Length: 315
Image 1 (cartoon, rainbow, N blue to C red):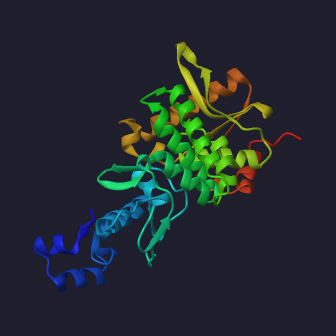
Image 2: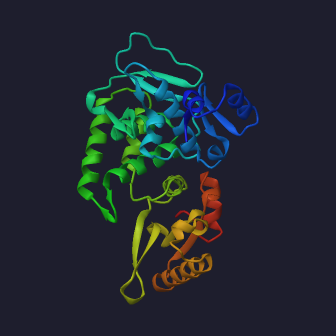
Image 3: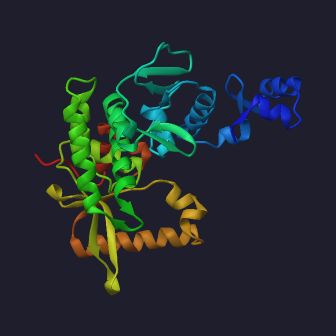
């Protein structure tokens, strides 16, 4: 979707047509000389809009700098959770001249060959280096969401969870953190790396887990199996074992996205969810709460939501 001015001109556009489309807001200016159709831009999540920006910057870039931090994160498909960068991050090890600009931040840092990869045609930092930089510099909510997603990308093989890959990933991340000494944000990075759990399936689940702990609950169990009818197994997103309750983060896409519903009607999805919840409540005698994005933005908001289901932190 990201087109250069040159490609537009070669495709039959004129300079006047390009400028007119930008003024009419049918063509969105990503950065000087790079565009995306406004209709396409409007359908993108913040991660997608930043990826478009990364593509434009890296196509223009010269020298040895590579995309880094959250800019590499969107190339890897990691979430940014309510963080919308206005500038693209690039890192280089030993520049002859280093300067940032209105839409680019350039970092100087050690950049060994094993920390440089090409992904989707874009030179960026490795997954491990990208997560390391993100968990040092982003706020905790975005850091936890990114760390969870990075671990999941490393360890999830279809429906199989690779425990050996998780162990390797965590050892490597901890060694990187230990070697970083007094780097900026290293204290947060150490805590996030310890807290990360790739079994969280969505950014909202990652942030919910953080808020649950901030509220005073123990770290919840994730993807808790519950024996269902006729040999079936149900899974609850969260097991709050200290208060004998289950929790479910309900992203709207589960109900509204026809692709995720796999051809099942919305009514059938809702009925199956109700039957599942009734079974879990009845067979376990544990509490049960559901919440969405609007409830987990802050600890207080999630605390109020849980309290409405009579679920409160242990005293």
